[in-house]
Length: 547
Image (cartoon, rainbow, N blue to C red):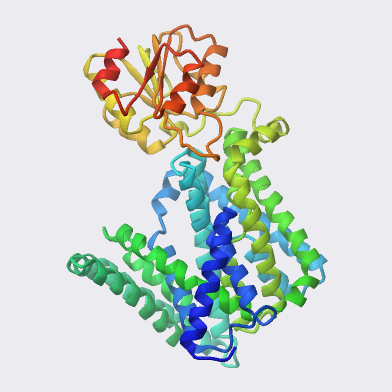
C-alpha cells in the first residue's frame, strides 16, 4: 500500500471498526473480528499492511500489554480456593489436549517440532473471552464459573512456563550453547529480582502517590510494562515474558483492579495491530490447503476439551451439569495460541503454514464456542439425557467445604443472596426467623455464614437439589434470584425452582421475586403465595408480606 503512515493507520482503523461492527452484530468476540480484519488487510486480501515499523511497534506493545494484564490478574488465591479441581482439571486438560493433539498433527504429516508447537497452542483457552461471556450471562460467580476461572488460571501458568522455556531456548539456540543459556538464565534471575524488590518495597507507596491522577496511573502502568518488555528483550528473553513479569510485580497492590480496568480497552485496541500484522504474514491460498486439517483440529478442540473436563469433574464428584458448563469454557483456543506460534515463527522453529493453521483453528473454535457458551442452557437441555456417564451414581455434594454437614431446622429457606436478598435476610433475622440461605456464589455463602446465618451452595436449576434441604420443617421458601432479560436469558430459574419444590412434595408457602411487570405476569402464572417486587417494596415491606 502506498501513502503516508497516517493514511495507512487511518484506513486500517476504519477497516477494524467496520469488521468489528459486523462481529458485534454476530455476537462474536473482538478477537475474531480482529483476525478477520487482519486477513482482509493482508497480502491475500486488500494488501493494506506493508512492512510498517509503526504497526510492528504497536503490535509489540499490544502483546506486552496483554501479558502485563495477565500477570496483573494472576489470581493464585482462586486456585487455592478451588485448588484440587482447578489443578486436576486444568493440568488434565492441558496434558490430554497436548498429547492427543500432537498425535493428530503427526498423523497429518507435520514435523515433530511443528506438531509440538500446534499441540501446545491447542491447550490454551481464552481467559479474556470466557470472563466476558460469563460476566454477560451473570455466571461469573456461579460454581462452574469459579471452577472455570480456576483452571483457566492454571492454563495461564502453563503459558508462562511455555513462553519462558521458548524464550530461553530461542535465546540460547545459537552456537554459544551453555554460555548463552547461563547468560539468559542470569538475565531472567535479574529481571525477577528487580520485580520482587519493587513489589516488596516500592510498588504500593509509589502507586499511592501516582494514583492521585488517574491519567498518570495509566501512563505509569503502560510505561512499566513497556520497560520490562524492553529490558527482557535486551537480556535475551522475550518481550512477552517481560510484560508478564511487570504485571506480576504490580499484581499484589491495592491498585491492581483500577489499573486493569483502565488498560483493558487500550489492550484491545493495540491487539488490533498484532492481528493486522499477523494477517499480513498469511497467505489465504495456503490456508485453503490447510482447511481439512484445521477442521479436524477444531473438532478435536470443540469436543475433546469439554469431554476431558467433564470426565475429570465427574470422577471428582461434581454433577454433570456443572461439568458440562465448565467444560464448554475450554472449547476454543486463545489469543495466546497465536502469540505462541508467532514466537515460534520469529525464532525460526516453525513456518508460516503452522501460523496460518493455528489462526484458522482459532477462528473456527472461538466463533463456535462463543455460541455454545451463550446458549449453554439450551444446549445442556438437548444433551442432558446422554450425559449420564459423566456423573457418579451417587455424586458427592458439590463444593462440600462451603456446606455444613448437618443442615439446621429452619422456618424459612431463602434462595439468592444478592442486594435485595441480603437485605431481606437481615430483616427476617432481626425478627427472629430461623433461616437457611442458598446461593450459587460461594463468596456470598461464606459472608452469610460469617454473619451467623446458615448458608449453603446450591444451583436453583438443579431439580435434585431441593431434596437435600430441610423442606419438611420450613414454612416458607423464598426466592430473590435476579433473572437477566433479553433473548439469551432463557427460562426464569424461579419456574424451575417451583416445579422442583412441588415435585419433592413441599407443602409450605412460596414467595417469588419479580423485577419487572413482564416477569411478574410470568411468575404470576405459577401462583406463588407472595410475589415480591423489590423496586416497589423495601426489605421491611417484603418481610411483612412473609408474615
